[in-house]
Length: 336
Image (cartoon, rainbow, N blue to C red):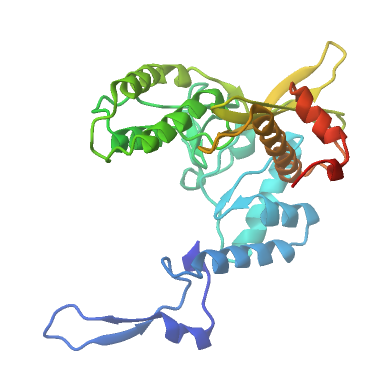
């Protein structure tokens, strides 16, 4: 992506390199003409040029997708029908190709959308793809034909040290918080490790070691999870965002669900969740419950922004009557 963006002639002096193939040869001077990986400005320059391409797009929907649905050089987009998706793909491809950004590695949950894509620009071999095939989308495992998010975590048999636990647990990649009820245990375990002031390669206490081994033995459970990507919404649907927060002396958490009322009954899907470990400084449980409600409010704001939801109805729950009393009273009643 970076190599597709030319640097202005006046600025190329800042990208000079010296080169020679052997000590006997004279040093040659070169100037790099394109955005160069490793420079501090490179990510912004490339992304800003991509954004400018979206601003100049002829079709408003195409421009919106380019400006809002790229993560660096990865595009994740969708449509409400196959025909709309095919047209959108063609428009985005054409617009970006004109500016020197040819797209490749296409994949879709409907093979008809990518059936005319040649093998060099497809992320998978269409002839070999089946219902169990999966690939990574920004680190998440996705089964295109079933349209599920999945996890692939391999247990590692190794010594129980702080370095090993940190390395092993880092392989659990869960940006949307689907595994929050499990990963929050890891966070509390890390906090305990730091409290014990254990060196990186030193054996950890037996109690923590047993907890870690028990957790690691259940890694296989993660691999059996199937989380639907589509939450069954359409532009015509009225739906709600439902959020819950809770806390204990160890941690506090928030989760946001999408609820779609139907004639047969409501459908509910988990959108995202987030957890935080309670601070080492002792706090009362009501204050931790209040921190949980703040976390939920921030999570609501993030979800509405990411899904571009304007006036969607949001309903939040907490089981702490003290916090509900605090929130319903005027702020001047409380000390800072």
